[in-house]
Image (tube, rainbow, N blue to C red):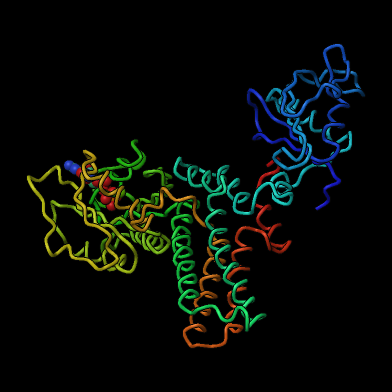
Length: 461
Ligand SMILES: Nc1nc2c(ncn2[C@@H]2O[C@H](COP(=O)(O)OP(=O)(O)OP(=O)(O)O)[C@@H](O)[C@H]2O)c(=O)[nH]1
Ligand SMILES: [Mg+2]
């Protein structure tokens, strides 16, 4: 990356709004602004700019001698800025024309258009944040629920990076001690095996905890695909409507009402859930229904979790068994629906399922009873029954892979130590574990990985 270049972009979302922000960073950011930022009397205002102090003025196009907009600029002197360089934010009115005219003035006066994520990439390369924080910036922007956002903000504050660093420091200290023993066998000697094993074990435990956040992290970032399956008339579409709080799907007492799968996004206890209502499963000769049932099979196969809805009025029938056969190999929750129609209800043995069954809950899609209980069951499953909601963020796929790699290296260290091999044999694996952790926080990553991370950003961030 060429830090001599000054870059500019519109940082707010496209479209009209009350205000918009054009951002510029790089060595010429302030000077370029000085070429078009002036007072009402067209007096240049560059000399009056002070870091972190906003200033009111006008943007003037010298070529046409026209005032483009009335603006407030906020200048930041590097290194105390988002990017670590001189940076300026021009707050203008939110019209598409003024924002693009101001951007054009930045470009005409020497800036170039920023690439995707280039502001954050500069912040990372200038040491203003580690890679986990830069990745969290993207997560904060893309968050669709409050919980997702809270997780991302924890990582943004550096809590995730801090946890990785803690493990890394303990391993670096261990490696230094081992290397000192190898260099000075007489004076220092081998590290006592018990001490070595304890440090490696503790590091492994901490990494396991971090790794367990990767699964919930994936669900929080990408959402959980939840298929609602069951025999016709069990109340699947009614459940969808109850969860969404509006009449999204057609509900009738005619079995086979839903013919095509239907998808809707839902915020379930802060977890983004893609709900898929499906056609009821039963043996049928109806051609259209058959196609619908085929789609149901596909929806089940592609889902992370299935809600198997059954009807307490009919009890557990052959059609329910047909559905259970389809969902048996994936996580599912059995929901016995329409309990508002019976005096009391108990799950009998016939509802028995296998170990992929997370819970069996009586509900009423009509009154909403049992819905909170089943939302909690989904939440517990997403978070693996752990209190990860309070943890300092979650690993993304890239970080998860590196965490697994570090754990594999630590397992080799333990194996070597247990076999009483000379300590120089385990130094290489220990070094590999440390390198994986450096790569996680971005202190030792290839150009290709950095480019890949920032390519996911939008321009202006
Ligand atoms: N009393 C009561 N009736 C319900 C409940 N859930 C669904 N129903 C009724 O059961 C009938 C079928 O409901 P749907 O939601 O269309 O059932 P479905 O499983 O989507 O049916 P198909 O689309 O045909 O597979 C409708 O008459 C609903 O009003 C419930 O919890 N209580
Ligand atoms: Mg339906």
